[in-house]
Every structure is written in structure tokens, then in C-alpha cells.
Length: 419
Image (cartoon, rainbow, N blue to C red):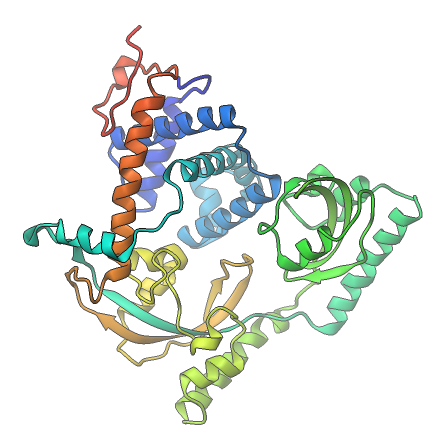
């Protein structure tokens, strides 16, 4: 028990199984300590009124489900492993994900977001003995050209007319927003709740969605509008400062197989143009790629973990398991065939061509090549110290009692009840 929050043996066993599946196994004591720490964070979040909105939870659930499907290769394999349908898995994950997001937000308050200065990074590097410098694994720099499947005009118009008919029924008072959302909305995160999202903050939803939502007055129903997910309209139920409670309905245009694979055929043609010298890869990325984050810099991908252009195998597997296998067999300058992947931005399938720009051999860390990694290491050391200090103080004033049968030697200094 940590405060009022129990930790179950089954929770620990599930965590161990999932880590094993991800090929990042933790020993039992390390996994257990992380769970105790999370509960301590949540207990403190209760005191400090730290919360997360429904929209944040839904976005994270969708992201994780897409990751798990990639991890297990297919949705069928995921369901086979858990013995449940994906929608059941998602619903059962909801409470855990909400707790984890609350814990992350609370941890952010502890560690802060102040970055180490260049002088601090140099001091950190100099403090590492020569024979203890970390070995940097082989890394790659990669470029991409992305094509996202587009719906045909007829499918989009049909979806727009369908959702407009629902909007008119709401405006005329023929049916409530809640009822229509339960019956017809194609947003899996909110349909069963009548399209309701609580405490929607800026920076969580699609920018086009937020632009409409934050322009509404209490009780107002928006016009039909389009986002990357499809067509929506919103009813603002309550505005609480910079937080919104709202209902919405989503209708997604229906995509045919021909529409879906058209983008793959377009990439085949782009690949031919590059190989024939009509465009360089960089020119083709700027002219044809649908990925706004990489097209302006010639398709060069940025590692979200380090903000650098370098990726090791672990970084790649977090983005797309197939990238590791594909890149391991490629030579510098070589381009892949069009590959299907799931976009991390919107969770939708798309296609891309990958080019291996550079490969960096394993080496001992140095300031010239590994500045960003060393900055992250310095930040991590500072965060660990802040967290250990916080655990030592908070565990003294929080009820913590662990079953002696599962007692462990923890890394931090915990105060645990003996009774």
C-alpha cells in the first residue's frame, strides 16, 4: 500500500511480462520500485490537485495501441497474446494510462524543465573517468519521403453530408448531441460517452479541432469542419478558464483499397524519378513529401528523444520496428522500397521511402559527436538526484507498507512501515 493505493502482485507480473515482450526486461525489484514510485507520485498528485483531461488519456491510449499492434506485428497477434479484443484491451488500459499520465505530470513538477547549460555539460563530461566513458552504439542518420493516403472527393462529400444531417437534427432539437454521438460517431474514445470530453486543454487535440473548440461560446454548436481524422462538429457544454468540456461527433470518409494504395504507387514513381536523376532525394522530399516535419530539411528525420539527427536501434524500434530490420541491410546512400507504417502524429497508416544518409560506428562518447546525448545524460543525473531527494522526504510522511515476502533492496532511500 502507498497511501490509499494498492499494488497487486498481478500488476507486477503483468509489468514483467510486457517488459519481456519488449525485450527490455527489468529485474523484479527494479520493476517493483518503479511501481511504488508511481503510486507515491499519484498520492502526491491528489494532494496537489494534479489531473489530466479525457482527451490526453484518449490520445495516449491510441498511441499505445498503435505501438502494441506494431510490436506484435498484427492486431490478431496482439489479441491472441492477451486473449481479448483490442477494444477490450484499450478499455482495460484506460485507468492505468490515466494514472501513468498523472504520475508523469507530477514527476515533471519535481524535476522541472530547466536544461543544463553548456558549462554544466562540459563539467559532467569531465567528471566521467576516461575508462568509464559510455560506449555509444552504432547510430544512423536517415531521410524519408512520406505519402499519406487521400480519400476520393465522392467519399469526402458523402461523409460531409452525413455529418451535416446530424448537425441539423441537433439544431432543430430533433435529437440530442449525446444520443447521436452514441449512435453514429466514429471516435472510439468518446462515442460511448455521448461524444463527451472533459477538461480539454490547448495543445492536446488536433490544431484544427482546437481552433474551432476554443472559438465557441457555452451551448454553441459549431459548423462542420475537417481535421486529419475526418469531419466533426462540436457542442461546447462548459468553458472553465482555459479548459473546455465538450461533445463532438466524428464521421470518417470511407477509403477504398484503390485510394489506400494510390500513395504507394505515387512513391514508386517518385523513387524512379530519383533513380533517373530527375530529382535528388532532398528535392523530391521538399516537392512531394506529405510529412511537414521533415520535408523542408530534405526529409532528414529528427530523433524525438534526443533532438538530434542520430538514431540507435532502440530509438528506431520506438518509432517503427520495421526500420531496424530494413536499415541493418542497407548501405549508405541506399533507398528502400515504399514501406507501410503508422504515423505517430495521427495514428493512421501511410507509406514512406527511407534513405540511409549516414552510419556512425560504435565509439566512446565525446563532446564533438555526442553533445546531445551527453546533455541528456547530465539532465538525467540531475533528475535522478532530485527524485531521490523527493522520495526520501515524501516517503517519511506517506503511509507505505509492503509485504515482507516481496521486500527488495531499493535504489532510493525509502521510509517503509514495519508494522
